[in-house]
Length: 376
Ligand code: PMP
Image (tube, rainbow, N blue to C red; front, side, top):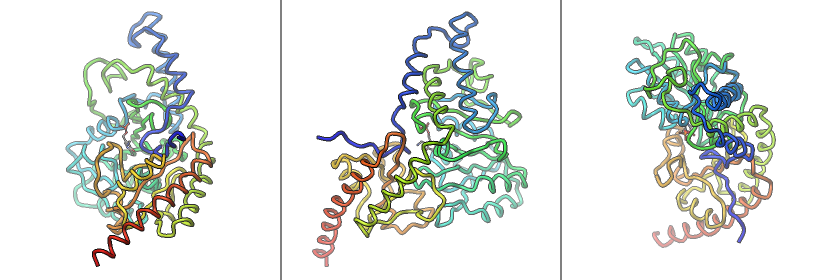
């Protein structure tokens, strides 16, 4: 049997060989990076070099980088600073934003998946000033790119601070944090081909901040606890490979080929946000009338790993809040899966997936229409 094909990079990319090599090398170092002796200093050098590599991804100063256990922690830490002020968040944010500030006012998105800038302006102009705005750079389910430059300009005009979850944007589109005037951004290593369990909050000096994790003085007292040196080394290696943005240039034609094949083979296929500005690696596909979880299982049996909605914590099955916020018809939303490509995806994977999609659709659509006939 052929090895299964991984097409779920937005949930987590496979570890890149360079990241693995950097981690293995770092694991050989004995010292605690806070120790002053030679061993400690060797570990410290890895962390400080990594800080530069991660900062370069966003054109941020290295001093802005706080290493965390991932983007969930980074998002929570960024929003922790704002409580109890008024917070505005887009309705399509990751749960690590939405759950961190349940009291926040949710900003609607347009049917194309882009945050409604007029609604943001109205909310900012409200009688009570907003302290913080959180809008992600790229949505994890649809791949739709958000107008961060315009959001930043509005936030600046009304004196609100902007936090951007850049997890799905890093390495996929150019981001210049300083040029944009964004106060803080979050990153996750495993979306870049680095290891799981490490990420960063990148927060410009002078931004109000309250540490979530207190204790030792690590990360300039902004995040206590001995740093995960090997994971940080792997994160840096993945960041170095992502900085040049070579990958999106290779993935764009593959994703376009995938979408044109599936729509040609199965005309019932709906491509969500097809006309919106999107990152190159994400295809959000629906087979209306079929349930997404059935599609995911059928495709898995065919040897293709994809997600239903935001399957960050796998197993949970409910209609996606993101698609709901975009006012996607319920029947279309219920049949939507996310196919996300990355550094190890090739043409054969895309063509194999399209053929599997066609076989699965033929079976499931035929079954659906039989069921409809029986009910009628
Ligand atoms: N934000 C977005 C947009 C994500 O896609 C994810 C990962 N699913 C996260 C935050 C959380 O990242 P982590 O897995 O590093 O906690």
